[in-house]
Length: 141
Image 1 (tube, rainbow, N blue to C red):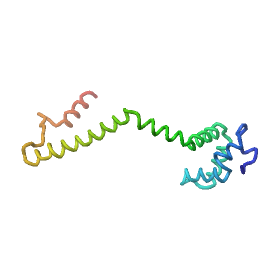
Image 2 (image 1 turned 90 degrees about the vertical axis):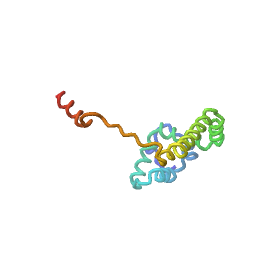
Image 3 (image 1 turned 180 degrees about the horizontal axis):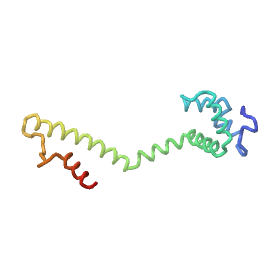
Image 4 (image 1 turned 180 degrees about the vertical axis):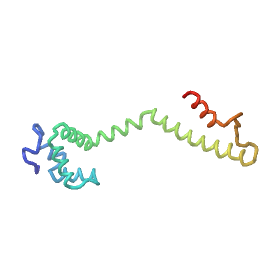
């Protein structure tokens, strides 16, 4: 593996580590690929820490096993695409987007352009809202 016995946590199956994660250089390369901004010395330190954590190593091996199983990817894609609620969500988003664009471009915009509709301006009576809010805040203190 490229690690000494003191650098590997007790209970780690070294043959599984070699099979699924690779040797020390492969693990360092994976860490560097995932953490591009990290310096090489820091990557080596993190790999050594990682190898001392049995639970993380076993979880990473399990992840690599699931990732390598082609049935898992196909089953997930099939289950997602055969679910009617997924297609319903897609249909709602597409219809909503198309409907909004239609209403905006075909109904609303021409009415504003022709002058049939005008922008709404609401004039609040009395003082401005900011002044009223400032007076209310001052009176409560």
